[in-house]
Amino acid sequence: MKQLLAFVRKEFYHVFRDKRTLLILFGMPIVQIVLFGLALSSEVKNIGVAVMDNARDVQSEQIIAKIRSSAQFEIKEDELNYKEIEEHFKTGEIKCAVLFPANFGSKLYKAEGAQIQVIADASDPNTATTVANYLNVIVRNYQGELNPNTQLSYQIIPEIRQLYNEEQNGSLNFIPGVIALIFMIVSTALTSVSVVREKEMGTLEILLVSPFKPVLVLLAKAIPYLVLSLIDFIIILLLSVFFLDVEIWGSLPLLFVESTLFIITCLSLGLLISNVTNSQQTAMLISMMGMMLPTMLLTGFMFPLENMPKIFQWISNILPSKYYYAIMKGVMLKGLGFSYVWKETLVLVGMSTVLLFIALKNFKNRLQ
Amino acid sequence: MENKAISCKNLTKQFGDFKAVDRVTFDVEQGEIFGFLGANGAGKTTAMRILCGLSFPTSGEATVAGFDVYKQQEQIKKNIGYMSQKFSLYDNLTILENIVFYGGVYGVSRVDIKIRSDELISTLGLEKEAKKLVGELPLGWKQKLAFSVAIFHRPKIVFLDEPTGGVDPVTRRQFWDMIYQAAESGITVFVTTHYMDEAEYCDRISVMVDGRVEALDSPTNLKNKFQTDTMDNVFYQLARGAKRADS
Image 1 (cartoon, each protein chain N blue to C red):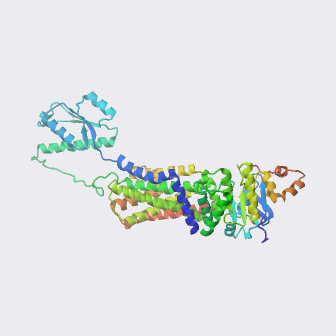
Image 2 (cartoon, rainbow over the protein chains, first blue to last red):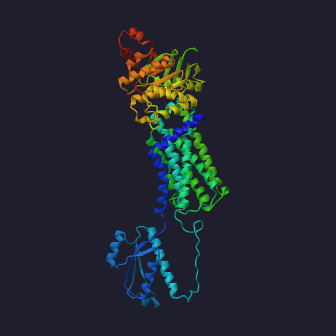
């Protein structure tokens, strides 16, 4: 036990004296949360819009006023002609343009109805769709104000409720994903690199000649990264709650238990990688390409799994992060209890047991 | 057999058809400096791994510090020290932290660690550097420190695997002074080397060729036997008959 403590203390020295490790450990989660939280927001605000008002009547002015007063749009004050509009699209100053024909107001009260043209920059299709929707709503509202008394005879109004995320907080979806990613980096990549580093330096040999049990070498390597992963987990949770306004619905103890389980899976993976590689670069590469990339692409946190070809859906089934992501989403964002996630938990337990068994077996065999 | 530090009888390690170590028999006396020579691929490392309790022999017998290499690996590990050709301390730990760590791994009590590390640091004259990272030390000092750490837990036998690789002649000489001191204090030294001048410093040498011990005697006797005045020639005459290429 005392030997183990001496070893664990040594591991912490390594971590706290290496700037790069520190940066990965504590810089990475913060940067990722901030990036994913702010930069990847699906909300659209302050879109540059150009208005070309050929009508200049009361009705067109009123609609323009409405666009101006909405938070989503920012109108370019100077009037532009067609050519200038195209130029502004190219430079990216505006994402959309609204054009009123000359006789807008007078046509509005005639049978054929009035038209306006909306041009959106669809090089970013998501923004273009959102912009078009916003403008549609503004125009429809205006229509409603024009004839408040005349109700259409048959009207269906869908009342849409966005369950579990009523405010449409864009951060919700990827926080569990970011957590899985960070665990992969810390527990898989850093752990495997730290074992392989000792192989490269020749210190592992010394440790194996010592009476210190080989299994304890692995344990002593794993403990510090388990602790550090949990600290990262707390950092991410705090950032999510206080910085990104994410509400955590499920029970915190359950979140910690499930996360510890997943960290153990990642650690086993890391130890396994370190057994089969002899250089830090290889270990890093395998962890990054083999583990992190699939985690990003195939767990459903960036791209919906349902839309992927069958083969990718199969592959995703062998990724531990897929199950962890599902658990986290359920517990953290929907407030589900253990009875809803026991299947995924069981899969993770199974995976860690198998991986840990192979890692230990492999480690022992290599010694003989 | 109990009095011998190391005792091997027909020790063999076979990988498939390949006999890395082939019926090797030798004894090492307590307090002796035993040179273990051989060209690359001759089977030195394999033999040494068995004696250090890292792998099992295929057949034959061997005891290290009186413990059986088949059944008492754990006991063997407690009673030996080891230093390899690769550098064996942690660069980003201080001298003191390295000492405390290895002491802890070998289960030396906290009090003993304190007493011995103070003693060690003053013998090496490293009082000012004790809190410095090992990475900042020159290679010669690191090597000397690594040896001191290898015998820090007072082992019965210390295995040195090409300990002076890449070190300048002056430091090598100093390093051998330390080896003599250790031997005088009763520690048996088992050392592999490629430097033939170092071989001359040993009490006895064995030369391995193709997995077998082809010669074993004191340097003087070996030179007489092969009718030459340098160990270089002795080694060359033995090793040129080798069939195995460098591994």
